[in-house]
Image (cartoon, rainbow, N blue to C red; front, side, top):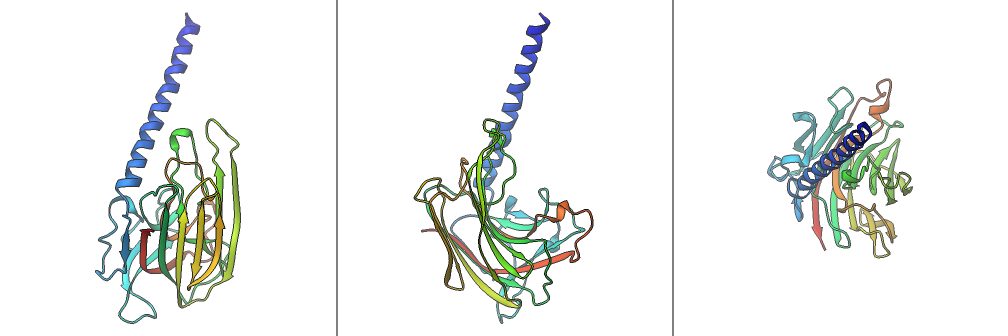
Length: 270
């Protein structure tokens, strides 16, 4: 009798965990689709506000984390300045000040663009600052944890670094998974200068996948074939300032504040 009761208790616990996970996934997916920045989108911040970025599309800790300012080194132009400080509150488990768009769909071609300005007084160190990423939409109901983005552009020391990742994610049903993660491109960056970026993506686990990255009108990276994870929804755009390694530091970094500027942000389906 006791054994039967124990089995029932364990079974009930498992069912409750699954139901809670499914409910959390449903809420997350609803927010990812309906409460984030829309596509198509174009924002040069001419209105001097973030009227196109509402609800959960803003991942910031403080009012000063993201503000509209006069674009540096560009007359009569506005820009969004994103700032992170090591002493600021943690946002979604890390030090970040980012905006995001809604989740996309597989096998459909999207194009994203933005202009990025790295301040002239930027000091190099070994803690990367991610400025643009195509983040996956995790399937929490399968026990999926945090993963590196399928596409990521960051500043590391004095270099632009582009990383890509794809494959089968570890879950409750497959603890090992099969993820590939590579540094796909790098190049020294110039301080005090605007840089134009274009990203074209067709997310897929098959041969029809496409990733193309242009810098100042020049193609710097191209990949055909599998390019993302086996999630229910395809990745979404995030941009701003995000220092993933800061949260693991035992002492503050040498440079505790980072700021990056953006303008002419757009997203569309081709």
